[in-house]
Image 1 (cartoon, rainbow, N blue to C red):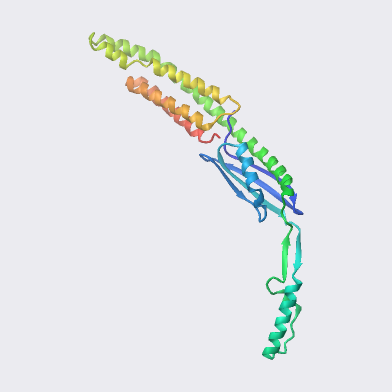
Image 2: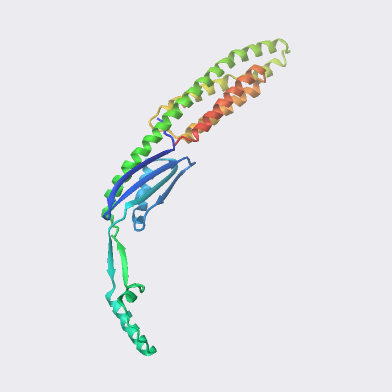
Length: 272
């Protein structure tokens, strides 16, 4: 069954002593475009996440965002050696300048590099937790894409049935036109007219393409690009029918068929 390209999934997990939320959004796109928004340190998982997305979908702009709802545990690191160097040099400078001001602890800890706050280190061991959240979020996203696909399927299938209805009217009308026109032509002009107005091949191809389209729609895996190609073939054949038989009634059918094909192609822009 066909799938759409719009979806959203969300899952939560814990890593580095903090709680995170992983969100995956999917929008229409001609090709597969993966965009990642990961916190500092989590870029070690970029390649793995990208490969997972590539395995699960063929088209769409997929945005994966990992955000912490509660920050990871942090630790304070005191560089005692650097603090002692600062203190020693500040005392020496104070004596040189003849300053009597005492050096306070707050003065030293405010200096660069003395006190640092570090988050828990991100390691490959955290991947199972991130992967588990990714799978849950992507499951929800795929479900939405399948629901959109069902809606598109119903709409496209309905339009194909309407299209078949209009096409079924063309052969009998064409036969009547040829019969009437043949009566007014000479024996020399008649063969050329019959060859130029023969639409049997086009009608046969139209029936084949519609049947093929309907089969593809029901397949477990189908590409929106492939369906669009079939739609282009339908468009080409119906244009030939209109060119061969410039009759008012047939032109009316041709216009209606072309309009339906165009609407089908618009829907296919939403298909994976």
